Image (cartoon, rainbow, N blue to C red; front, side):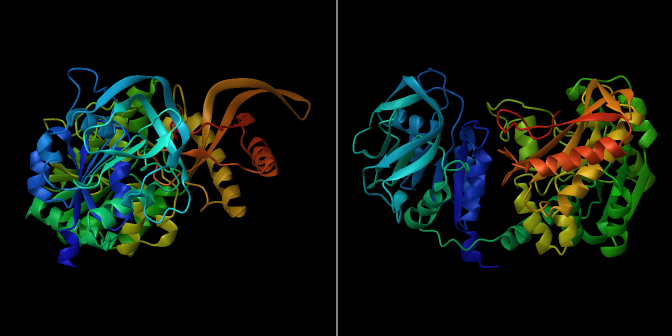
Length: 518
């Protein structure tokens, strides 16, 4: 590992944006390690990572409000290059003597900016017009002293600004999201051509850093790792095994809410391929009993999370206790459940593995993947030697099929959904589409409709199919299937799955929807 490259770090100060971690992700893609700190802990961030550059995230606040978050003038006067994004631009302008006002014409969604000034932010950009993603109601109306405009849009005359002498920059748009096609290039220009980073950090570097963190946190303690059957917990388990070896015991819980053949595949891989100690718990009836009569999706998630914890606690006691519980929590789980930094972002939905442990448990949490996205986890998994066929599997939620059955859950509904989902995935693979799609699954709706089969009247459930493309799970678009594919899948499901007589396809993007239905 090249120590000089490890010392090249970018500090990201979080002002409460739902997509702050995307900034970190894009920075890592440019070959530079980054860490996120709350804007209130900027001093700790400066001291800990000694950054070569600082990025100020967006956020939901308005600088016009007297109590809005502010960036410290010490940061702006530190001599370290600074890039403010959206709210980050507005707060740095406000702090340096500029003016921010409510806009009469807000910008939400795609917009075109015109590059009108020379700056390394736009180094090697061939065109003067760029497509970007806007999301703001306020806008800068007056620049601080010694700042100049380097890009403008129809409703944001100061879409990008710069003080080249102090190396302070601001953009009103979001370069971190995929909807800004050249946003990654802008961030790379900032990290490499403005901050002077070499851009040689890799996921292998992260692996080594993560292993050292685990060793430092765990010490001589013992760890149990909860396996859900998904890629995340599996990668976390293998990473932990590499870090602490025999100090780790994995626990796989069969909830009865798993995909077809899930249990056999997971248990086989860990026992046979990696030779990792594994406890297999059959808890199917217990989960079904606890979920009986529950319709609210938040309650389902909470019940499932609590049940997992109870089982992990019980199994840990059977082996003489454990000091730590490890989970494969990822950032998209965290940001939808609670702000990554405890700040002002809002809860979208609770995830079964987010939120800490009850006080009665004597274990602390180990979450080595908490700052990563799915594709980064997959890259880490390959680095750890996990087979590609397992790494490339679509994401599967810890609560399993329970959150793909809106309304009450029964054994019959689970079996109906499992069969429909298996057919759907089988057809996707036969069509050669599996790797093109980020995630695909079937949903059993709490709706029954009249149908006719063999001259007989049916009154059965509606099955919804979902398939999305995404890079990181934070945003997603529905997959544009050919009509013939959908027709074929629908025919198979209706013919082969008793209990379904109608199939629909979900064409909702994220946002405004989520990927999962619950």
